[in-house]
Image 1 (spheres, rainbow, N blue to C red):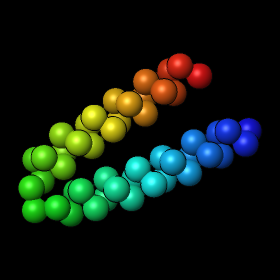
Image 2: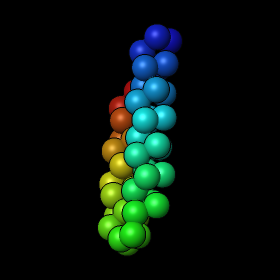
Image 3: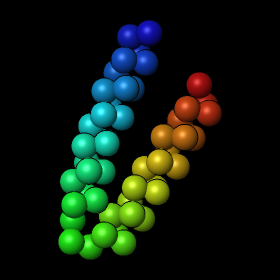
Length: 48
């Protein structure tokens, strides 16, 4: 459970980064980055 909490915290940090990237002037670049992050997160969740 403690590990899950840490993972959730890291996801929250990633979401904040995503929000900052989404606010970036180069939106298409930000979207690509968001897609990459989402893929990584989904893969990590599948590995559980």
